[in-house]
Image 1: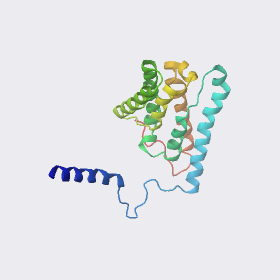
Image 2: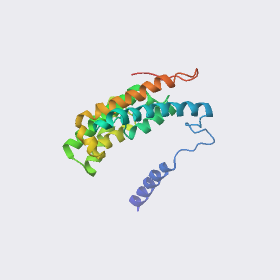
Image 3: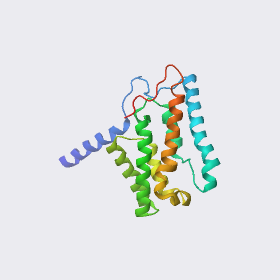
Image 4: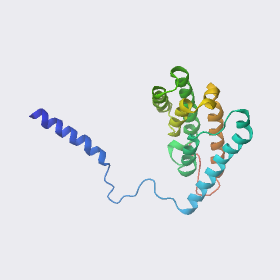
Length: 193
């Protein structure tokens, strides 16, 4: 009976953690941005993704390559919308994508396509980003794309982490440096390393 009561208490504590914290009227840490902040974020995202997409369609895709991948959309949200976040800083943006691209290609080369390769790519990319202090959540998608991205991505092999991944991340960074520093009250980056 004591064992059942002990298990019941532990299960109750475990399930209670899923309720989240009480906010008691405290604001959400990601408060709603005002219209001006939203317009700056829009401008950065439009220019950053637009530059990658334009260069991809004009120069890379005619040569059976690409300069744009889905994970760049999430990076744009971070570096233009939440540019003060540690996850949005240059080390994280560039390092997280590059490391994840390398891990993803290695998993594809060693395991192939399938659920195991996908799981290993994302989980190992996460560990690599944690160990190198380069956590950038879109990096998980970059690793996954290396496995499930199709023949065009697979043909790139170990070029994928450098082009489109590194080159695209550098373009997003360059646009972030310009756009995020235009307004007087915005500063990007908070730190480089």
